[in-house]
Image (cartoon, rainbow, N blue to C red; front, side, top):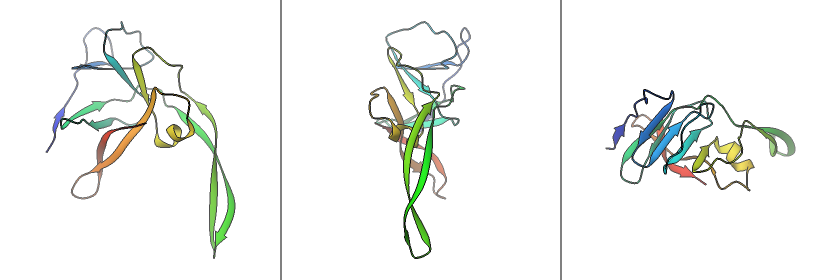
Length: 141
């Protein structure tokens, strides 16, 4: 069983959290930079990321959401079931790279990107005994 670490609010900067070498903050607030890596959650959900040492890092939403436009086109059918191809369009809500920071976006938004080494999506889904998603194993490049 993993130990869950809940990150407490810094009394001087809203939405700033620190744990070991990880700093989590809202991108719409000024944060004095340190030698830590910032994880900026650009999804509307809290992320519970299981680390390699078994702890869980809870990353709250930043308040901004990165999205990708999609267009689905029917390309074939199998009997009465249509088969679609998805074409990714414009990505919105994704800031320019920030020094010592990474962005976590949805899997679909991440799939539409190929040129950003600072953008990740949640890793493999972790489920509880009843099958309910409760977090992810690391991050997906």
